[in-house]
Amino acid sequence: MSEDTIELSPFGTKVARGYALELRNQNEAGDRKRFGNSASGGGYTSSNNTSGKQRMEVGMKLPHNESHTELLILAGMEEKIRFALHPSFVSHVVGIMGVHRERICPRFGTMALALSLGEMASICPLAGAQYHWTALLAPPRIRAFSTWMQGWITVFGWQAAVTSICFLVATQIQGLIILNHPEYEPQRWHGTLLMWAVMLFSLTINVFAARILPLLQLLGGLMHVVFFIVLIVPLVLLSPRSTPDFVFTELLNQGGWSSDGVSWCLGMLTVTYCFIGFDGAIHMSEEVHNPATVVPRILIQTIVINGTLAFGFILVMLFCIGDIHAILHSPTGFPIIAMFYQATGSVHATTAMQSAITLIGFVSNIAVVASVSRLTWAFARDGGLPYSRFFAHVDATYHIPIRAICLVCFTVIVLSLVNIASTTALSAILALTTSSLFISYIIPIAMMARKRIRKERIAFGPFALGRWGLAINLYAIIFGIFICTFVSFPTEIPVTATNMNYSGPVFLGVSVLLICDWAVRGRGRFTGPLKELLTRGAEM
Image (cartoon, rainbow, N blue to C red; front, side, top):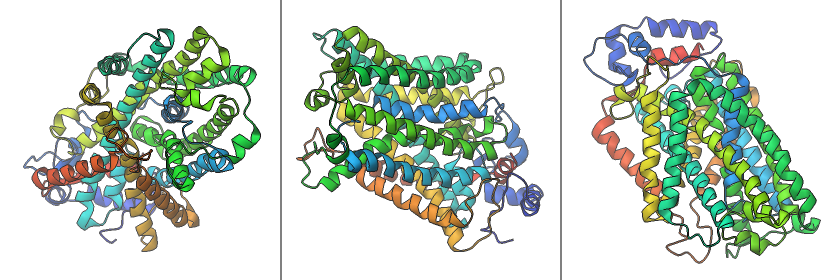
């Protein structure tokens, strides 16, 4: 069996079982040399003589608590709340060019990504997800470096994602205050304090009430369905009607771009932003029974269900949008609040309707913090974080990675301080969500496509793309590159210091820092996840 051929299967095919047995029987000296020897489960080489299996088992296994339904709701809530809370979701419309393509194109592209990631999740369902698959699929000569970069990019992307949800919920609360008290002058530090409240609430639930997380996820799913109907009905019955020509043939270019094509591409980014985060379910893989089968199914169901509901939601929004100028320039900062008020004419009714979405935001953030903390914990377990042994600890009483949860929440609190100095600076950091997560998707998919092109042997799990695999992988890569290209474009012309899109420079700066960190701290020491860990993931 060639060194660069990874054959691991959740079903334990003969080849995969033989390979797993080969991994277990490797002598300890060779294991330390090639795959690290750290109490965190991988990563840094040391003189510790503890076996790889012991390193994995001590304080670093999570109980299986998540059901299929709960995991589906977790994955779906991350997408739905972005669509509901994002303040610019009607800034770029419309038509068969807008409604159809701006919603359908991202849906097809995201489905290709989900199918590709689902196939890899079926091969090795571990909480580290993208960076674990990179460790499995990357060529040996770049395996350690690519795993390092992939792990950090994924962690940064998800950390920015959870911060963005807190920011959106906080600013939406400020929008409701403006609606009810027009004399209120919002201050940036008010938003920061609200972000702290949202995050501390999520921290409290994740640490001290972790047992009710499945119940909260089920409640969140129920709220999504009920509130979808409750919010749509008043809009349909009370709002002024847009013409079908407006909805299906017009393209609204509010960015000042001379090219409608560029404006359309930028408008699609808003829709795409609402689709990212579907991989949140993968990071809970180690707490799910039979994840090799369940997780891929959830990824597909998430895109199908959310895509269908969101398409219906945006159709209703466009038919009921009314005065576009008033909607887009609402003093609340949220077009959806202005739409509710335009339809009902009542501050109290609007507050009640918008509070429903805000409540979903609170519940969603709890689930997202749980997912991000598992990703952070997994990367620490593999030796990727500073003080990895400390953050890889699983509390013996609560059976959850409390230190990783606290790290995620503390990082959000620190980032929220940037908002006091400049909302533009915070927005630049939060822009890492889209670019980082899409790059984290592209890297392992590219590794898988490389193996397919080279016709290397791969022991697939119960979910495989078969002969369509390479085409789907390539389409997913092209779509991801397209999104990463346009996500750095400014949304408005002319460009000023205020509306400048700093996501490109910020991502470049972060990448340079990661490379420097690799040169100083990682090179020659970090070797990626232990083979025993990857083998265990393959046998789940």
